[in-house]
Image: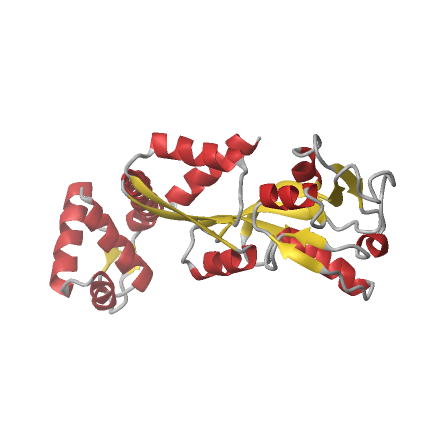
Length: 291
């Protein structure tokens, strides 16, 4: 008994016609008929009633049909499993990360994936979060770590790794340093240094200001938290960072909650629905690293 014989048997059973079944499996009608005759001979029973123009199943054929379908499905599953392993032996992955990313669990995930699948070539690139999300949708990027405001982008699978409120960060001698907290109106009275447009953190700030008809003076922009903190430390402007970002500079900057901005800034991994095996494996590595 061969898988192709089972395939032809299922095709005739579903088409109820040898000619249409032959067209479906792309061989001649005589070839289909011969293979099914061999299968019937091996099984010792007729599978089809050939007394009319319609090929109808005999009781033996009806009994065999479900098992034939199951055998074909099992064979397809074996082929798919082997194919997925082969895809992980060699291939390419393009991974994006928001500009200025220093989130080490992402690098840990990439290292773990590379150790397990050294044959997969990894390309790592930086860009603004909104462009990275578009590139993931379009297929130019397989997986990306992006910033977002309140929720990950629609139409993509996502795993949120950070969800934090914004804070203002100032040096000890700044007029706001002793206030404990600030409102957005109080904050925008001073020059600001923040992430560029297209980042999740900046999107949260811009939306909050627009909702209150405030026009902040963002005099400096930087893609890396280190640069933002360095500029704020030198009194150039008030830094706008997330809570965990600001905590890294507690020795030189005082973090002030912005009391009327409740929308969190997110950091999330995003990828397309129904990803390939390499992306699934990298997502699993990332979940372990970020946990």
